[in-house]
Image (cartoon, rainbow, N blue to C red; front, side, top):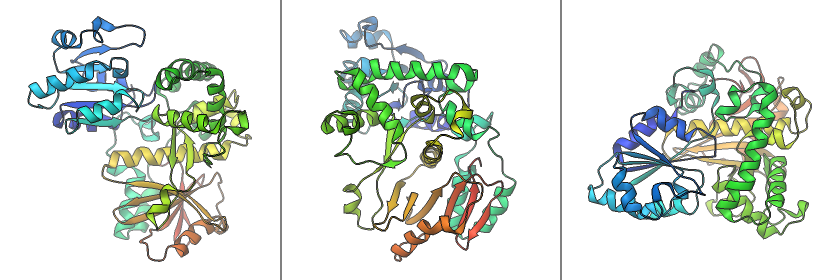
Length: 418
């Protein structure tokens, strides 16, 4: 049982909303989290091939036999319940704490829930395990995590205080190659190294042959499996949607539909490009990432963490993992936050830009233990290109042992800070 940062937020949401929906990829720990936080509640799990207690045929009778508060797992397999849940919530005057639902996709039932229960439902997206969750027996407050401290230091002008703190801060003790190779799923952490490839093989097969076909009516699961492997190889790259899929001989429109399906089933995410002109942000190429590096390593046929060290995907997987860590921490902080990447016509680029409260926080991610001033050129170009923006000091996440300034306004930071 790993401590999950989302536990406290889940409790707060259930105390304020009649319905809370926990979404996320398969095997990410949704059910475990609900049972851990609410062990005394009645629990029912649905299945695509079985009408559990005739819930789909007689939803009103089902809810009569299972009064709230109630946990309904994999609600997308019982869409007929949504209308009955709404009537029950309304009959109870939208009292908080009635239903906890889980789902592994954003389409169909999830959109119906959002529309039918507007104002009565809250959504919580559960990601894979973060470094701090892997490293601690207790949940750390979001404000104590390194990224939260860095943003606070930027806005208060206390960067040197942050550097002093980071020199003695706790760190993830595991090795970088093994962390990337195992991935972020809870089950993958408990297995012997020799069994991890079997876990990811089973994960891939179940996702491709069952989940994706149910979610998006994939006719040829063999081609879709090839497509998922293609996207693994393209992680941490800009995605040209119009050309997507040509490499494996499928229609570009089909490839775009499949990519949207991967996003809807929490296997893929994208960072839009940053432009000072907000209209342009939605019209240019996004940068895409596979959600879990463990699956990417499986698709690349890496049999052990040692194979990752000399693999050409090592740098892309490191960037994928660090961007995922940033997203996980920002989700805990609450409030509105945007993430972007940036590339100039000259080729200068910045891997990740956090936009929050009128500030821009640019970050580079480099798989090096000896960062140089030359590697800060992208950060410098971004600052020069946006003189009217409020831009904080640059940050380079890399494999240094201790934090150090590599230019007047760029700090190199160890990747494994907690």
